[in-house]
Image (cartoon, rainbow, N blue to C red; front, side):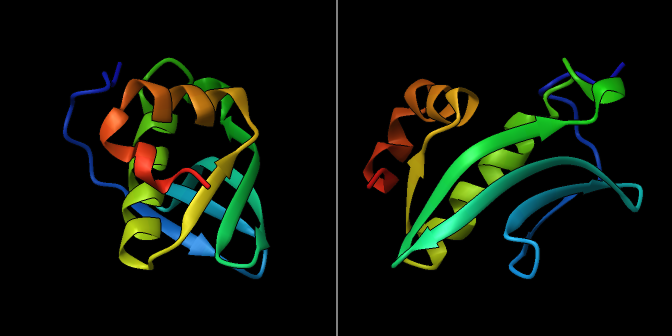
Length: 99
């Protein structure tokens, strides 16, 4: 079983055509964060992980990659999803990204 601190090859990508961020592991979409834009703010109503991969830190990896991308792009986030809001609350260094 993969644990949150384990090193795995993964990619977090923005898929603007589907309005979501995706965590890719072994060419498979494992976790997604749906969003819509409100100006420069990414509004995230939903984060979901493949049921087979839950409990292995996949959504955490997705959130980390998404927040890093938002920071690079000078964008903010409005986390409506309880998981996304909790991730940011648990990582106070990212609180400045909250719109």
